[in-house]
Image (tube, each protein chain N blue to C red):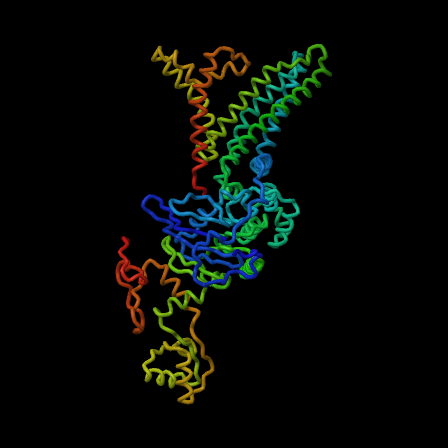
Amino acid sequence: MITVEGLTRTYGDFTAVDDVSFACRPGRVTGFLGPNGAGKTTTMRILVGLTPATRGRALIGGHTYHQLRNPARHVGVLLDAGAQHGGRTGREILTLGATAMGLPRSRVDEMLQLVSLTETEARRRLRHYSLGMKQRLGIAHALLGEPQVLVLDEPANGLDPAGIRWMRGLLKDYADRGGTVLLSSHLLHEVEQIADEMILIGHGRVVAQGDKKTLMDSHRGTRAETTHVICLDNDRLAEVLRERGVTVRPHGPGLAAECASVDVGRAAAEHQLVLTDLRAADEGGLEDLFLELTSATQREQPSAGGWAGPPAGPPPGFPPPPAPPTYGGPR
Amino acid sequence: MSHPAPPPPYQPPASTASPAATPGGPGIDLRGTASIPLARLVQVELRKALDTLASFWFVVGLAIIVVGTEVLLTIAIIVQEEPSTPGDYASVASFITGIGLPVLAIMLVTTEWSQRTAMVTFTIEPRRERVLLAKYAVCLVLTIATVLLALVLGFVCAGVCELALPDLTTWEVDWSVIAGFFITQVLAMTLGFALACLLLNTPAAIVGFFVYRLLPLLVFSAIGGFFEWFQDVQPYIDFEVAKGPLYDLSLDSAEELLQLLTSGLLWLGLPLGFGLWRILRAEVK
């Protein structure tokens, strides 16, 4: 539904978005993930026609944003919840949007209800809104025109935990009904929980994309597998594992062993050690991957399976990314 | 042989790898959607011109000043037993609103930037020229409304005088004065609009608006004092002078029209052109 091809935007010498290509499909929530200043917002702004692209193109449903007549009826956009006049009430802001889009006034009440803004809150002026309330109003504004596509920049910003859960449910439900969602965030955990697919972007370039499993699998080879284990006799288990050449270090109430969990289980069984907890330490995996792929100071990756202890200190300078063997691009 | 092509019974398999750009993929059917009619954009922009705290109080303040002045004027005329016509009161009201209204026109454009609402405005209607056209139409609507209100006020005040001083009050209205005033008002609104587009900043545009009208007077008289030949050129580049025949609808020579066009292009056309160009091209943040 959203197709971005070779999108590039430069400001003088600075390349904010560098040859970015991706696609978002209906029924899926696509997370656009990257550190601050990675080019997420610029890409989204180009997508909705606020910033002209230097090269490449961005299409929504096969059209450029400018070609969409009354685009708000097709694409719900929230780029900055604070970009509203502070002297207008929440209700007034939605009313203006609904009028322009050609919607009945009743739509305003429906949307206020949907985002749980009370009548009193809707009568207050935006400058008295908390960030979370602005965010809710922004979501309401984006959903006004019953769009098929949602483009949201950092939508969970300023929401409290309950608000984030609400948003998650809302977007999941929206996608389940066939909608296309592109949302950006610099918070991995937020995206991980909501997005079916992820696009990782760093320094204006897409560094990885796919669903969580694909991402993890495609980079599995470059990382050590870690297992968290708690045993009634941690010391003995550590000893046994070290005998087998596994690196073990204390981790909370138990151990972290750099091998597959099945190997830990087998070792424990053979030595009749009682385990109370055994699981693959996967949570950190995606985060590591994210940081690895998007950080400016990427550390050198061991080429083969040698994971000798703590990572060597990052070498000075900015080594090229590990994926393409020879990358002669100027830094 | 082609198949009868029923609606596809299943979605294409969701390959986990990022699908290569699929131009034939799901699209948006635009046939059911009409463009936003310009009238609706004007309606929205008119509402935006008046629905904020700042603009609301600005209009209320202006109304209080105008009504207050008219009341004082009426009292003075009755006390002094002076003759008056509705046009007298109307032109006083118009004079005051003529200073205030361009500020409203300026704010209509600049607040989109200072409050960053341009992001929302231009995502709802990405054809920015239509938004600008709607905003300019609002300027015209406001001008017409004020001239009409000034007339109504003029008749009300004259009505009061009629009761007090029936012999000294006449109901004749010099329509050429009203028309001339309307034209100048439109030009002032246009200048405010142009400067707002050019500067995209409320205080700068308001200051610019007043400097713009005073500075040429000073500069031209200074230059004219030093160089005699300048007096031949001045009518062609001095908009304030060239506008003169418009006030009383006495524009009748081709020369005056040419002077109006050249000076208007210089003082109004250029800033408006650059301003529009700037907004149409600007990256909206």
